[in-house]
Structure formats: structure tokens, C-alpha cells
Image (cartoon, rainbow, N blue to C red; front, side, top):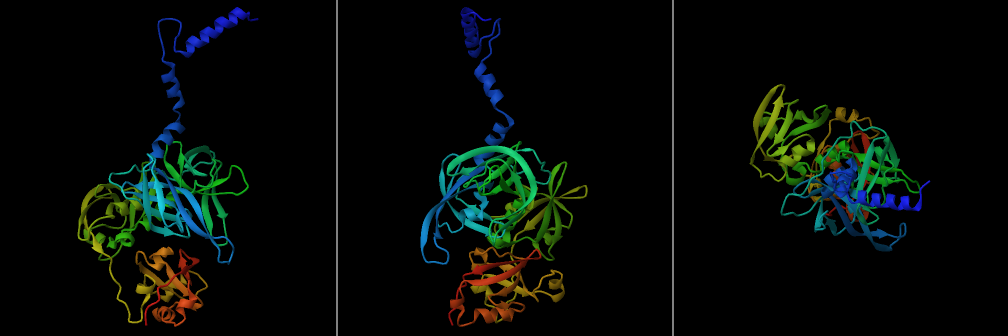
Amino acid sequence: MYTPAFRLQFGRLLAFLACGVVVGLTTFPSRLVGSELRRSAIVKAVEGAQPSVVNIHGRKTIRDDVGGENFNQVNGMGTGVIIDERGYIITNYHVVEGVGRIQVTLHDKRSRIGRLVAHDRKTDMAIVKIPTDAPLPVVKIGTSSDLLQGETVIAVGNAYGYEDTVTRGIISALHRTVQVSDEQQYRDLIQTDASINPGNSGGPLLNIDGEMIGINVAVRVGAQGIGFAIPVDEVMVIAARLLNAERIGGMWHGVEGKSVFGESGAQFIVTSVQPNSPAARAGIHKDDVIEAVGDTQVKRSLDFERGILHSELGEEISVAARRKEELLKLSLVVRGAPRVAESPQDDSWQQLGLRLKPLAKTNFQRMNTRFRGGLSVVAVRPDSPAAAEGIQPGDVLVGMHVWETVKLQDVAYILSRPDLKQLQPLKFFIVRDNEPLYGHLQVSVAAR
């Protein structure tokens, strides 16, 4: 057994060891050794990602009684992730919906006022832009194509207003469907037991390498250890659509593509080129692999759009493409989006912000819906009622209020009705990816 004296001596030895003194001639600075031991993979992942994570605050007006006329101002909070060094941030739409003044706080505590650039209500994603004088740190983007059930993940966000909160867990399940309301359903979600709380929405879910593999979106009320994130591959497709150069800046390139993930990483492969488009004139072909646009390295469709965004009409942009084994240096000249001739009765561009064209009956029948026909959305005017509701080129408008929209004359009839103001907001129905969706438009009433 220890004697009191021996315990005293043993205690002194421990004290010497804690100071970095070891019997013999070698001295180890224990604080440095300890710090290196503490710098785990999780610590390094958080350090790498945190500068690109922002906190979002704002006040929004909500109705405090269903169907009533009483409204309250409430404080909203959430998180966002910088995806472009020029100040473009991705977050959940419900974080910024109805917020008049979007206050964005960077990791270094600088504050900026952001503006909502684009959003998609169905997928609950939005892009916010903040002004910046210098390039901002961009999150490292991973892939959700190879996620493993049980692998370690990290959530970063503004949990309950506690900025830059970090939580750790594992991937509990993949491909979850979550119904959060009668109108909102999330599909193909990542389920995790990393603590995700109110305020985490719009923040990144990271893997152990510090790569963003998802956007945190929802918690299961009343449950513990059940949170959900939108897979990053889907997020990047949505972000590319929201930051489409034609949609944001009226610039046309004519490229459609997809990301393919392999052992060497992601590649952006051209799936189609619009005839007589700038891309076609530049010599870009189907199945080309785009490696760079200007100074932007391209791995995804979002990178391609980022490379063209903020260009000037008529500007010549260098494009590096690989065709089989050949590396090509091409020049793409940005042009304005092509206009579709408007018929005399088509007021949809001015009042809705939609440029429409009839959809061939055979093409519509392939969509396998209960509707009789529809009008294809060719373009959406920025800052229009249609853009505010997330309507996108490629959608098919199939109805408004109680009327079908099979012909342009159908839309003209609705917009010319003398009771249009009383019908506000005007319910609309679209088909996107063979799925019927609806929303409400606050239509500008033309003077007559």
C-alpha cells in the first residue's frame, strides 16, 4: 500500500510531468503535444469550413391567427453557406421568406445586408447575395453520392441564435422522405443524429474531411437525435438553376450538362447544346467534359454558371474542354437570351413575368398528368411575380385559378378579366419533372 510520503512524492512526479519534464535529458513541451493531440480530424474539418458559414437574422411578419387579420413581427434566424467568393450564399428559403432586411454576419463578425437573388419554394432553397470588397472564403464541396450509413458528420450553424455552434454525429439513414406540412415535403434526405436545432437551417452538414455533403433543413419535433439534411448533389443542381446566367443576368450560353462522380472526382459533362447558341458557335459538343470557364475550374453545373455570371454581353470567355483524349481551348461569346415573338394577346410577360409558348400535344402526353395541356415556360423575368414564386424555365403552366391554360389566349383571357384584382392572389398550377405543383401569384393588373 502507498504510504502518505510515497503519495506525496508521486504527486510531485505527476506535477513535473505536467510541466513537460521527463526523467533524463529530454524535455517535451506538453502544451504543444497536447494541442496536436486535440487537433482531431473533426477539429480540422470545422476549422476549414467555419469561415464560409454565415449567420442570418431578420424580422418577418406572420399571421398569429389562422385566417385572421392579426399579424406579429418575429425574429427569424438561420444559417447560410458561401458558395461563390463574390458573395453568393445558399440557404433554406424558409430562413429568408418574408424577411424585409436580411442581416448576414460573417465568421469574422462583419455584418452585411443581403438581398434575395432567387429561390425555389418547392425545394426550400434560396440564394442570397451580399456586397463584398474582397473574395470571401468558399465552402469545400463534397458529394452525397457515396455516403455511408454510420459515417461521422458535423453540423455547423446558428442553433437557437448561438452563432457558430458545432455538433457531431453519424449518418443514421439515407433517402428519407419527410412531410413537414400539407404543402411542403422533402425527399431523399440524409438523416443524422448530430444535433440540429432551430437556427441550424441552411447550414452545412460536413463529412470528416470538412467537405459539405448536405444542407441542414429540418428537425423532428419532439424527437431526440433525429435531424435531416438535403444531399449536396441535389443542392448544387438547384443552386445552378437559381444562379443560371440567363435567369440572373439575361445572358445565354446554350449548355445543358450534368455532374458525374468517379474515382478521380466530379466531372461536368455536356448533355446537350442548343442549336445556334453561343455554345454551339464556340464548338462545344455533346459529351464534352468542361474543365474550366475563364478562371473558374468546373466540376459541376454550378461552376459553369459561376464562370459566366457577371460577364458582359459580347464578352469572349475562354473554355477548356476535353473531348475524349483531346484538350480543346474554345472561346464562348456571351449573347443575350433569345426572345420569343409575342402574340398580340400575350400580356403574360408584363403582368406575370412569364414568356410562354404552346407545348405540342404529343410532348405533353409524355408527362402523364391528368391535365389536358399546357404552356411551356420559356423565360422568367427577374423581380417578377413569377420569379418571386420560384417558377422556372422548363416548367409547364397548366392552369390559373379555375381555368386551364392550354393556349396563349387562355392566359390573355384570365389577365384581361375585370375581376382580376378580386381574384388576387391568383392560384396557379404547373408541372415540373412530371410532378404537379401549385402556388399563388400577386399579379400586376394592367391599366385598361
